[in-house]
Length: 487
Image (cartoon, rainbow, N blue to C red; front, side, top):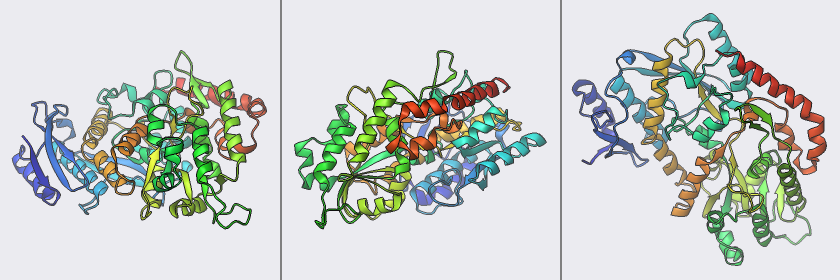
């Protein structure tokens, strides 16, 4: 059976659910049709997916209070947990529909309490609640960078692998994140389809499709999407393409922001290239425990390759973000590194066609592309003061499941209102997000983040490692000790 129900009838639908029970499309163990959403404001029921149970009596009448980060700007805020009303805005309305459906089905309410984006404020707020023993927050959506790690090692977060209502093997939970963040068999933070803010901070490469074609670069070197699919999209290839596009437009012999460049990027984003080489600051051993992996033959090769590229200032421009955005948006750069949230905010109104690529490999010998996610990603956790752990796990699981059919399609549709939508770019973007990488060092400060961000152009990795290895190892030892003390 297939029904199409317009978004303007959503409120009427919900009223009908409360009074009649089975009038809304829903998923149940009885095999009824699944709700799907889109940015066009319609809800379709097209697939039999018996996953969510018909009822969960323990949830009836409960209010779930989730602490979120209020970053004070559009780049870092949590905007996909609650929505007060329908606004004809795809993501807002998808969140509203998701929550309204689940709240009506199970009888609970979601409450969002925002705190600042400050690490210390968030840590203090959660620690104080846990010390009081009061169930103030059922879950927290927090900044992964240092906040989550500090809370995990100080016994302030629950091991999510002990929560039976979290179905962690399902695809709506980010499996690569789970693999990376599980330490000694314990997992304290989680992300997946319930939040697109994790996708927002994935590092990508934008490219100007029109400039690529006008300069005959695709003919001379190859179509970027084809190169990606063949495993041949490398830093050298990107540099060769960029060299064909770069030009001293005013002929003054200098390269300034009025000229055209092959690649523009902010210096503090160089760490994305380090991770693109398949490197990691913290890896794990055979016992699933963290080990320092920042220094290796491969890492040295990666750093040297990046340094070589940075030296060619006729092709590449390293500057802060704002000038680079203007250069790319005005059509004077072939490539620019960016985050997904930047695309949705900063590239609106760009008048030429542009596409999305993964950050290039260092060389073709590398098996996979590795797109790192910013250290400021939002992750979910359950504080130790939560007294309804299984119920909270169920709610988070249901939100993640239902987001597959509401929030995620709206996110992609909204993104492709800005980016040229074609089968290649859509498939590439999905592959990038599926393969996104998050390093344990983003949660636990080993001291390496800022050198990789700011010092890459002049870094001697061997001497840097020698000067930092003891301090970094002490951090790792502290991680293991702290997690061993968790309940």
